[in-house]
Image 1 (spheres, one colour):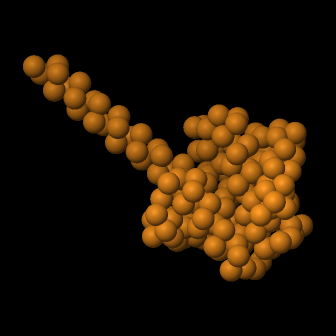
Image 2 (tube, one colour):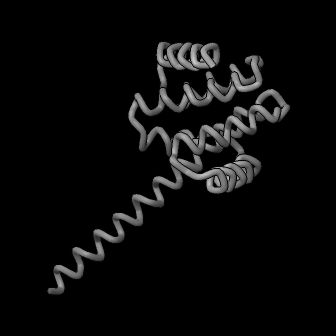
Length: 152
């Protein structure tokens, strides 16, 4: 009986840890999105709307949850001294395909205002490097995001 109780508590702790890891990954990705939105030193309304939509669609959140996550991500971005803590967390928990998809989301966000600023391109490239996304994956992600932008 005691062993069953210990097993139950371990399974609860594991589920709680999985939930906290998932929240940390969402926050890390949202911080990278916020930094991409800010890269050109302007926060266009289209970019703000797009980041909310991306967070909603990617994580299955309602609008209020997405906006709350983005507010938290903005606060984290303000206090952060580098992107390494966020990219490291994502690299540790996402596979290569998932990391490339994240780069595609960043490109999608960068295209939201209708143009790619040189600072946005630089930041997305830097994040892709920190996520160990190869150059070919970086280019594939950019092309998929651009094609989606043209078709909408």
